[in-house]
Image 1 (cartoon, rainbow, N blue to C red):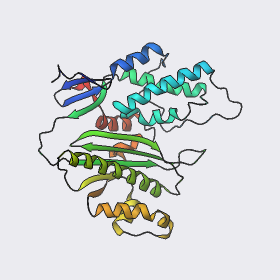
Image 2: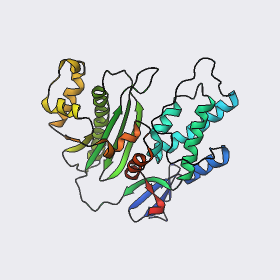
Image 3: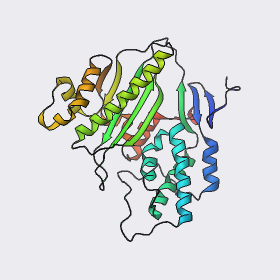
Image 4: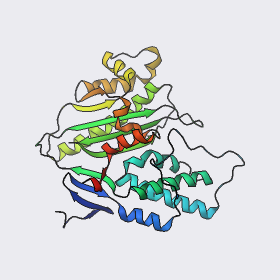
Length: 293
C-alpha cells in the first residue's frame, strides 16, 4: 500500500506502524526557499498569551510588494492548516485576519510560524490503524476563548473530531456574533462542534457503516454542563435558549457531554496561544511526528 499510494491532495503519505501519516514536506520546502523566515527557533508557533492587534493610525504598514508576499505566505500556511497541521491553526487564524493592512510586526509573526513549520517539517496527521470492527466511535472536544479581541469583542471557537482515535476534523474560528459570557461562548462552540459530529456520522451511515451511540463531546466549562444537565435557562442565559434546547435534545438521543480539564482538552490550543508545555501536550494528541514512528 505504501508503494502504490504515496500522495493525496499535495500531501505526502508515509506508512508507519501506527497507520498512515499525511504531511507536506514539499510545501514546507517551498516556504523555506521562497521566504526569508525568522532566524530564531521557537518552541511554539506564536508567543504564548499574546494576540496580534490591528495597526493604529500612523503605524507603519508594509509596502505593496511586501503585502503581496505576506498574503502569499499566509495562503501557504492556511493550506498547511487545512491538510496536515492543526497545531498552527490558531496562530494562522490570527495572522490571516491582518492581510489587508499588515505591519512589519504582523509579517514577523508570519515568519515565526513559517520557521516553526520548517523546524517541525516531519509533523503531520495520522490515520490510525483500527483493530475494532463496527460500530465507529466518534469523539470530540470543543473549547472557546471569550472576547479576546479588543476591537470587536468576538470570541474564538476551537474544535476537534476523532473517529476511532483518528483526527478527521479540526477548526479554529472567530465566532460571528458578540456573546455576553464565557458560558455563552462555549455554547456556540459546542453547537458548531455537534453539527460537525452529526455531519460526519451521517456520512458514515450513508456509506453503510454503523456508529456507536452515544457520541462523546468533551468540554471544560462546568457552567454549561450544569445548565444542560438541569435543562434550565436562567435569566442571564435565556437569550441562548435555542442553543441550550438543541444541545439538550441531542444529549437525550445521540451525544454524551463530558467534563474534561483544560489541560486535557485538545481544542484549548485552537483558541489561544498556549505556553510551550501545554502546546506540546495538545500537539501530541493532534499530530504525529514521523521521527517517532
